[in-house]
Length: 163
Length: 146
Image 1 (cartoon, rainbow over the protein chains, first blue to last red):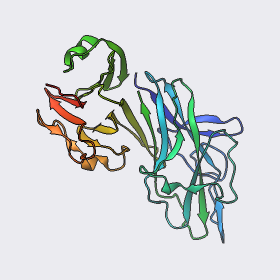
Image 2: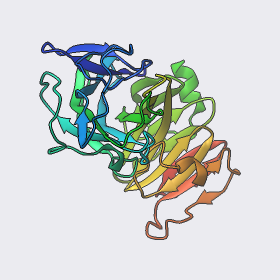
Image 3: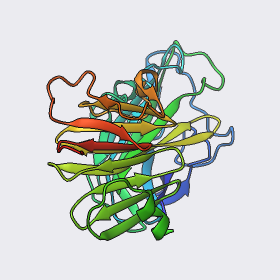
């Protein structure tokens, strides 16, 4: 069988994994995989605020014939979220309870991670049914210049090699 | 199924040592190191003429708002740093490390190329590695196939 890899979101202190392969990933003002309209990020009067982090990770649910290697994460290279909205990213090995960052220190502009320069999550090899590689940790920053409402959609890609 | 795989290959070498299922593709490793990938769209062989790899690259492309996800796969065959990419009915010979969504599709050649053709375009720095189309099969090699 070709391997099945889910792209999931992890929440709460226990790191509960929610499969988001076919689901919406919604940046919020609380630590939740929910996609409802509660806990929106409130546009500040000045400066900027952050969403809670989104801890994304790949998970093998059907093992590969041999192994998976070279796990990478990247965006499409252009911030389509609109004025005043930024997205930050970093790779983290060990899970921590998703928090609300106070600054972008330690993060990199997520849109600099492209197909030509992806965020490396793990070389592998990975062969068993389990979560794999580092977490891709994302946080949205919303400045006072942002426009209220749902942000336009963006595309994220998880890519890996398999033999 | 295994018999079909053996009959489908062009180059007669040793015994099959490993078969992997990649969904629409099958990967076969022979005892002498020859690598094959088979699908309805294309058959790819990498001769053991140097450092070889054969793998499938998968991209889970996700719209974060709607949740819509598209899974795309391309086969990558490699011989001494020269890669043959096969993606959705097209091929590319390159020394670059291409991702599925980096625009590679726009610079690929539609399959099938003409039998008997040898493709080395754009690879003047690697003149010894050749891609030959024979009997509908793509063979990445350095040795003389005659």
